[in-house]
Length: 81
Image 1: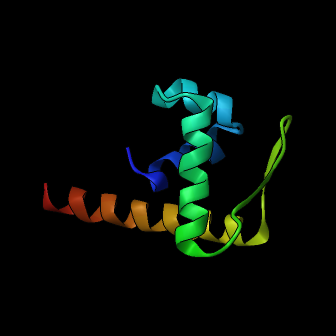
Image 2: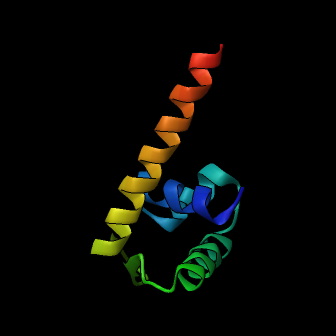
């Protein structure tokens, strides 16, 4: 599972702990994956503290675009079958 997949799972799950359960990773590993993705993109995707997580404007835009791309890829695959 790569950092992008983990990011999508955090957004879908609504928390790092829930995403950790789904992915089989530790909450710390999930947090580190998000930090690596943010560093790679040079932008903050989420505002987080010990109790909550919220997408930044950039994070929401990136999530919506990325999920749209994943959907388009799935449609293309299905057209080949």
